[in-house]
Length: 446
Image (cartoon, rainbow, N blue to C red; front, side):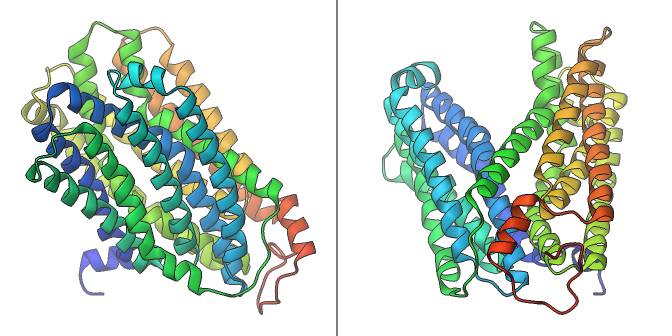
């Protein structure tokens, strides 16, 4: 490749270029969707849609992204040794359906309190919330299989169609005279479900046989990933929440810090395009014992993440105080040092995420969870130290992310050195032997 962008993409795991466009469309759709709602609805309805979107993107993300990641790992591991995805997909689908049924039952039982507390009494938005959870659950299963099979073209197309439909439908509603918060909420149901149809053909077409993962392995894997996801989301959002709790009346500081965090986290949006292909590439390499490819993919991805943080972080540190004043009308309460700690925190957070995906790929869910937990404890301890509020929150984020990254890297080195596999995976292999693959290493073999 002759251009720098091409070289950069070539160093990343396969499939990133096919996913990147869809990721951009889906990411942009969130802002456009909310903006169109703001122009189409009154203030109370806009507030309801904003809360709905926040709950779906936080709680829904925490519940169903682990399903996609674990299914990605299971399918890519089996695909690497010539086995099909359907047995694993069916088992994870049943588990996901059980989780979804529990969530819907809670929403149904608590519909009135949820409506009163979050949506100004509008039960229609509670229906929209339930439907959005269904859309997330279905799309996560489909994307998990596609990523595991390495079919990133339909994966990226699914993301793009999901985002495109959110934009299109949000634009069409006011043109049709529908200035309704409930109608806007149903977009979050229709778009992911319609987009999932794109991937179903690729999922159902693969008729190769293969073993289903054991129920304990599925429950344990998705459960631990859910804990890891929730802890990571807590960490990356903790600075603003901490300042709000420790200095509840300093609105200028809270607003400015929120704006600063948004700037510092810009590289995280780019990483979203890498995550699915990274798990697929690492899991496949681990399954066939290609340790050189595993290390090469991990090293390149870690280097690219560090480079992205450096390229985005330097101008953020130098220009951040002026940018948030110009772009967000923020009060001049932060300086370059504040932005430096936030940028470094984001660097370590992204490295922790990369190392966490590598641990996931070799079945080390517990080590990933414990590392996020250790980082969260350190974050809380540093934040509660005496001193000025903003530096404590910023250092807490930096220290917590660094501890998480270090813990995961240490666990990963130990796992790769000792070559142990989870007991559940070994037992599953004994019950359903995989076909022999030339060159498979004993490190990941039975």
